[in-house]
Image (cartoon, rainbow, N blue to C red; front, side):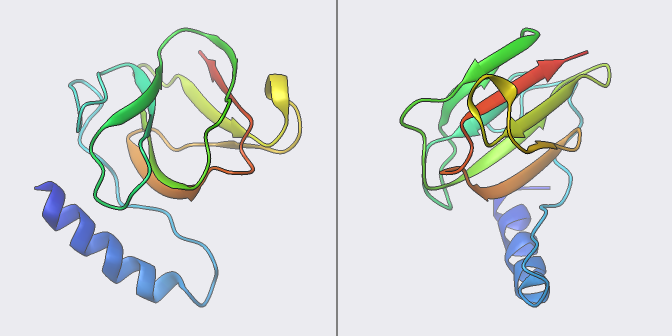
Length: 121
């Protein structure tokens, strides 16, 4: 499925999801290869902008990572392998409210309230 097709599907899904206030993107390609610049086994946050395909930050090792000066609406992709977890947390050092990103999924997110990510097996 081309990126343009993915975006069109997401836009249609977004219109349907507006009433619920929730938007989860359709699954990305399998995590056994690079997807839109995000290597297999990584969690990636792209640069701001709906059509951006430039990875801003990527994470592949287990740990907790604080985000600095990352804000606005961005694509986030969990391209992990072997059921590793990729969580977005509102507090620094993995504290606050944490949300697991589904494996092989993009999400269009306002990451302004996200201050750290956790990568774990």
